[in-house]
Length: 89
Length: 132
Image 1: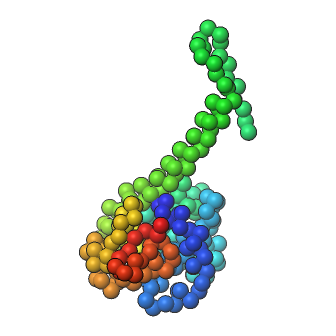
Image 2: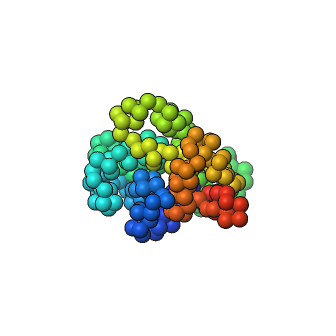
Image 3: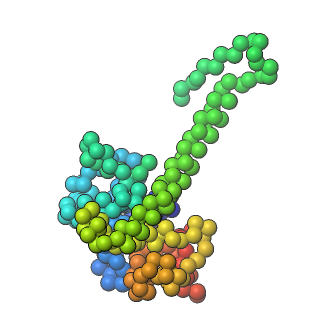
């Protein structure tokens, strides 16, 4: 989604502020999912579930669930050979 | 930059051809078109996938469990995709109706999109639009 991708740098900045995550007026799951999206390289390079889990500080199972969701809506794509992910081209 | 050599025989070309300029322009145009297509493509993928997302959300919880998707993330992305691309505003009630969510959940999701800078809120009207 072009709007989403063009907003990524701003989003990245905001999502680096940990307090947002614990704001009860916000959706923690949505924030985490967007933060994960913001951790995927904008240059189209592939990244692994392990890398994304370590960048976001989430466990592997949660990371995988968010990644699968982003793949399902067509924002990320998976390389079946390497099992790595990148922003949908 | 790679130069492509164009050979034109004397009897088939009837107007002067500046080989270099023609090729560079064409490359720039191709690049531009590719960039635009990439942007539009990603958007259209998301919009085209909306039916599926709706089905996932409306479907039996089993389906969500099987494929292990995040309902909150799906709802939030679906909400984002509801906003008109021309910058028109939507109110909380409209969003709630469009997404079939209660107004409190709707408010939490839209506030999250505002917090990350994807959506902006007009304080006077309390309505929302895609961040400009």
